Amino acid sequence: METNTSLNTRKQQATPRGVGVMCDWYAQKSENATIWATDGRTFTDFAGGIAVLNTGHRHPKIIKAVSNQLEHFTHTAYQVTPYESYISLAERINALAPIDGDAKTAFFTTGAEAVENAVKIARSYTGRHGIITFGNAFHGRSFMTMAMTGKIAPYKRDFGVMPAGVFHARYPVACNGITVDDAIESIHNIFSEDISAHDVAAIVLEPVQGEGGFHIAPTEFLTQLREICDAHGILLIADEVQSGFARTGQIFAMQYHDVKADLITMAKSLGGGFPISGVVGRAEVMDAPNAGGLGGTYAGSPIAVAAAHAVLDVIEEEKLCDRANTLGKTLVTLLETLKEKYPAVIQDIRALGSMIAVEVQNADIAKAIQNHAMEHGLLLLTCGKHGNVIRFLYPLTIPTEQFNAGLNILEKSFASL
Ligand SMILES: Cc1ncc(COP(=O)(O)O)c(C=O)c1O
Image 1 (cartoon, rainbow, N blue to C red):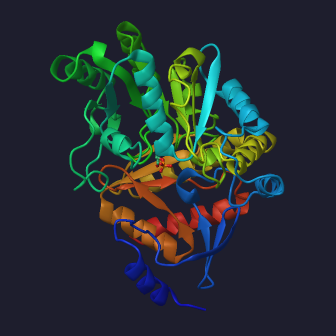
Image 2 (cartoon, protein in one colour; image 1 turned 45 degrees about the vertical axis):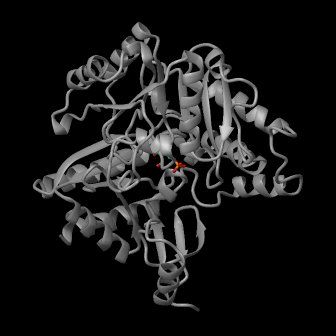
Image 3 (cartoon, rainbow, N blue to C red; image 1 turned 135 degrees about the horizontal axis):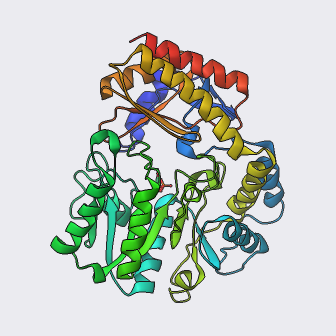
């Protein structure tokens, strides 16, 4: 068996440092909420492959659906030879998504690709070019989505001039003193200082910021954004790549609000470990681009589409939205107890269903907790502008006993500070 040291040396020699890697051990096998490492250790996965595994690693129903698809065909390119499963998946998403009136869905492969395509659709529909996103946003690593991302290091640093026409407003973050009024004012400032409202195609926001630190947009903010969009003919795009598919206790986080987006992007947990993304939106908006303007060789791969059908079945059959709320309550209760015990360490707790984060004093403390947890077999992710937020993205299918054991490790990690 090759050692971690030897694998790490080979990694360093064969792959660039730009692909930053968190763990210094290697995966061999995984199932539900457990990852077995090649060095014989096991880990409880509270990272979920960065929000991809709401239905857990290798859910038997997903594996079965994919295996069945492998027996039929693996790739035709949907734009060349279509298949029914793509259409029926679109029909299911159209029925589930909180979109006003008739909806249509197109599938792609990655989250960044979904966001890119949402921008293309918005530009095509409005005939305008401008895009407003938010400070601390994360929308991907392609050039347009990198421009839309509201954080320089590490995402934009040294990559030169970004595509033009992207402007950043402020995202309301109560604990940082940014009110809804401040955020709305920043949009009006963009209209008066950077780009006329009638040149703006879309405002793109994460209803719960992911990489930015799990900040939750208040309904009041979304209501005012909708009013601004309606007043100026601007589209509202919700990026639900991280918040989608039961994580927040709803299929889409936008379901918590009485406000509808024109387009919603999705990816990650839609595919349960297989790469698929999509854009759902108002039918007339989705139909704006000309035939051939949307797509991609692998977009809506039949294997990933089969997985996505199974994901939707599992979410429904195993009541994963309810489960997200139940698990979330248990974790929040623990975090509140920890806040009472360590008031100087814990600055804020943010939770919507099981999209939960705890903000600690600084990045060193977050790292220390993450390292201690990993040494004891629990995988945690950090996020946030300053890297001082620990986020929880455990599979919603995790057995209760394993979940509680994970919380026990978390508690000990705080105690170890
Ligand atoms: C909200 C959001 N949008 C877009 C992306 C980009 O997705 P991908 O990494 O699949 O391109 C991410 C990834 O973390 C995300 O969290």
